Amino acid sequence: MPRRVLQGTVTSDQNDKTITVLVERRFTHPVLKKTIRKSKKYRAHDENNTAKTGETVRIRECAPISKMKRWELVTEEMLAQDAAISKE
Image 1: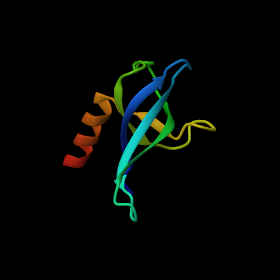
Image 2: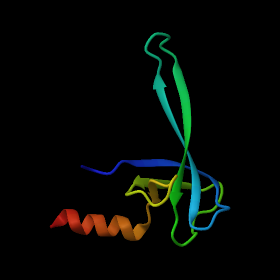
Image 3: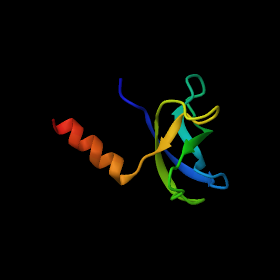
Image 4: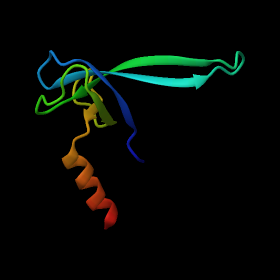
């Protein structure tokens, strides 16, 4: 099963190896036919503390790392590794 990938803005990088990412989604309300914005915060694992507040980042699902962390920061190395695996 493929891992979900979300894009959002880093709202906090205060904790060691953890970032808080605000992900916003837009959809049309089924009755009102009006575009609605909903947002949710995710805690993501950032091994090297590379992401800073205000940056736009991509996160993907992973195995549970702690009580709150179920997501990890997607880095260029991960993208290259996934591309190499998919070519095989």
